[in-house]
Length: 296
Image (cartoon, rainbow, N blue to C red; front, top):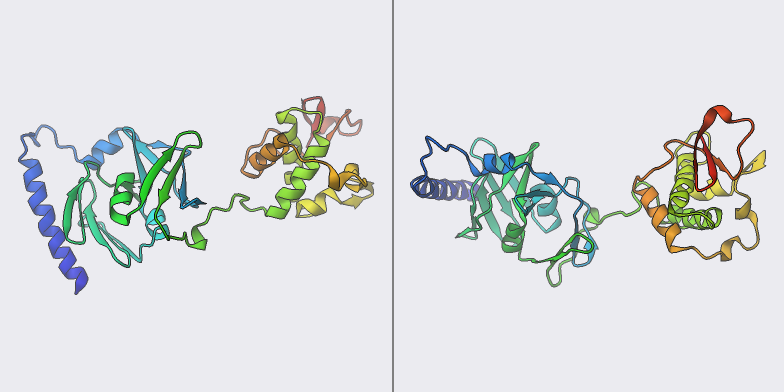
């Protein structure tokens, strides 16, 4: 019953506002472009922005878009993360309805007005569909969900703040991806030692060799097991030295290892490296980085 009432109200809301918009002096016969089409014509830009909710990093399944300088967030991702209990999209009416414990709001795809708890508002920015995903303006997140929105230019992070709100665990960002914190710890240790005289590129290359081994059926499947492996030969001799555990991990090693974990790779599928060329692996040579020889 509630949904029927909301639908009727929204349809009335749609008719009233579309009538006023279309009567505003623009000749729609000559300029029949909806706000959704206009947004798409402005070529949405996929960004590398991040979102923090009360200092917790939000895991997004879809990208943040920028259109004409304005940020748009994927509705399903951001809605569920910020407490939406119900999100409905009726494609035949282009109608979007969202409910939280204390807020009901709905809007029309391509229109810059929305209704929240019976109050009609205009935000001059319209939700739109892009690659079958509904995107809503960042400003709408503030007004509909009650979050303060702050932008950190240095880290390119959107900070959403609301006193007492806790981001659900399912939406917390896992900075280690498919790896673990333990993997990261041992990776940093080994890279800091092996690349101690190398530049960043050398650090990154060695980190990727270790991760490539973790992902190869020819080697163990954790970083710890890879670096301590003894199979005919000791694979990483420094790991077996008495001083290894006390060796200080550098900031360069930490950055290179995190970059490698997040997918940055400068050695493709290489599994071996050495300070001098391998006599028996000439055909597998890939490249030399910072004086080290890398092999597939």
